[in-house]
Image (cartoon, rainbow, N blue to C red; front, side, top):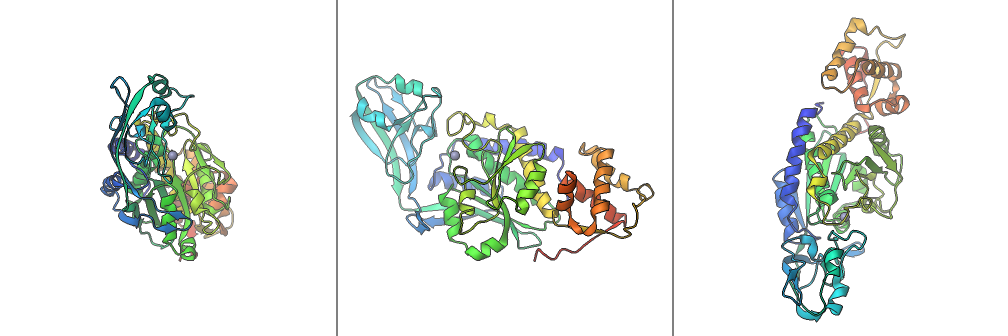
Amino acid sequence: MNNTNSKNIKSLGNWMHNLMLELYPICRSLAGPGNRESLFIIKKHIPIDILEVPSLKKVFDWTVPKEWSPKEAWIVDPNGKKRAVFSNNNLNLVSHSVPKNEEMDLSELLPHLYSLPAQPNVIPYVTSYYKEDWGFCMSEAEKKSLPKGKYQVFIDSKLEIGSMSLGEFLLPGESKKEILISTYICHPSMANDNLSGVVVAIGLYRLISQLKYRKYSYRFLFIPETIGSIAWLFHQDEHEIKERVIAGLVLSCIGNEGLFNWKKTRHGNSLIDRVVQLILKSSGVCMDFSPETGSDERQFCSPGFDMKIGLLSRSYPGTFSSYHTSADTPDKTPPNALEGSVDCLFNICMGMEVENIKYQRINPYGEPMLSKRGLYNNISIKKEEGIINSSDIRAHLMWVLNFSDGDHTLLDIAEKSGLDLNLLYKAAESATEANVLKKLLVSDID
Ligand code: ZN
């Protein structure tokens, strides 16, 4: 198995950030041309199929919304000054606003204006997906400065029957069992929430597609939040999907420099929960599953599906000050943070690839003499990458050599030792090359 190195990740960080800058200006929503344009850009970098689900189709308890096509929108104040101009900032117009061309008093307009008194200089992100309505968003400072009098309200948009676009790609591995990587594409002009999820998923694809060997298949989803995952699940066979998808991660708000945050699956102690907890040991926190907030893990973990899918973020959605505002800009998601997120996600996937491998000592009596087999030298390559020092090598080796009794998986050994799962794998592989261990065949992945 190839591993990544810090140099590749570094250039990947800049590449992801540039892709984010390309996607940032596009006005996305639940369904419409902005989503399609975004998926066409994504398709240049990961060969997704774009699936279209017809407007008004019933999917479980929900209805697929109409397509929204905004062209231009503004308010003209009594002095003739244009305000809340949509083409200046997508967030100025409430998402899914119906067309409007009407003169009205400030008092009639005010109920349709949204601002954030606690953050007076930012434009909030407001949607009206499931109720036909209209509105504008502006800073609290601007709202307070509006003069009394007659306003012209102009919204050139269409809400019409069409379809909702979903992006999906399956990267095959040796097994048909899948790890699902799901992220959402419905937010306009916000970086951390959630272009970070989009570019990090593509970054992961770039690394994982280069592996010479993959045990698992990886399915990537780029879908509108909530209705997209519900529509996707609607088209799956409930029993088959639970068998096929052994684990998954929803990516949300994963582009800033905060600590990683794993919201566990509904099971709480499934393989992916155990692997993520090990990988995040010093770089993040884990929280129990909760359906109150979050993202599409709430659909994947609804009781009918109950899949082993959690949410990986760096600042949990809703907990950072720029959340759902015009202040969520790409400069808050620098290349090094995006690099760190892909690195973490890649390590989680590699951990899943190796967690259930078992080894057995060829001669289990006493400790093998390491120096005469050159075992230290085999692993010291990693020293050049700055990943591991010699005492770490010894620790990882000693643990796999003792617990490779045919019963303990690498995940068991990592949990017992508190050591790095992926380095335990490397230590065990080196010991296998040196004929000290043999790898046992794993039959539990089809
Ligand atoms: Zn959001």
